[in-house]
Length: 323
Image (cartoon, rainbow, N blue to C red; front, side, top):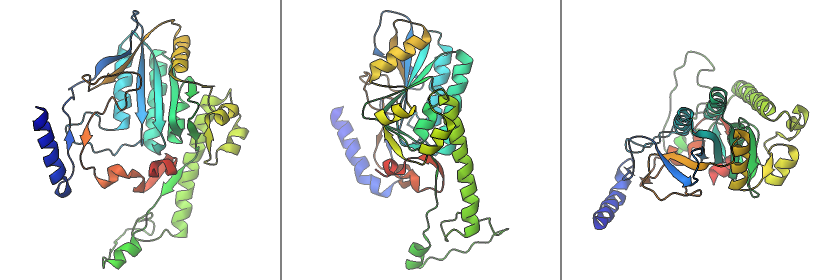
């Protein structure tokens, strides 16, 4: 069996240059299954949900992969946790530079809806990076715990409009645009932004930025004032100690700190730690990487690898996305 898999993988690598992309999904199940990450003799459970990588809605993982995009992943787990009375709280583990404005906002609101519907606490645990949209989502949680080495902050909005006009002209490609109004093709990659278009997009950026500030203020009003928030929300990043001193995070520590915090908020003294996955046959523990998406991607589409090149509005720490 092992030799057959090696041969199949080699063939896929050979043909990947002339095909779109392949996904090998040998362990995938048809529905989410519960796996135990930390055992306990009690029936109470705490669920870990991972938010990793770019937060977006345009993922194209193929028919064999179970996880379609970040919103669907988080939503499915919140729904399943809401239906299990033994799940008493959630640890939302964040390792993300942020992403799309809309995707970040939807996940934020799904967390708020879950808390309101169930009364169960959600605690954010920041890993290496929880910036911009990652922090936006964290502000929906009842407490925010950062690892000692976490980078967070980057509160702000960025809008990206690539211009390929010069590149196309060098290869002899011309683009003709027929439009119904002067602003209809604003933001097109085929010509520079006009001053009117820049002003229009700046208004949109400012609106999203003010919503970001409102969101953080709502979640952190007891820790940081609006005046102070506006002083520091210029896109800069912070270390965990800096973020704690500013009131952006509540405590610095490791998984056990988040574990104790969510148990305290849930009013319990012990709990089993679980995760939901389509890949229950994997070996699992608290630090298993990408438990929910065990798929070998042979050749990804360009937009999946560098989604930040798509025009749009982002709660995103761009240097991390470019890494």
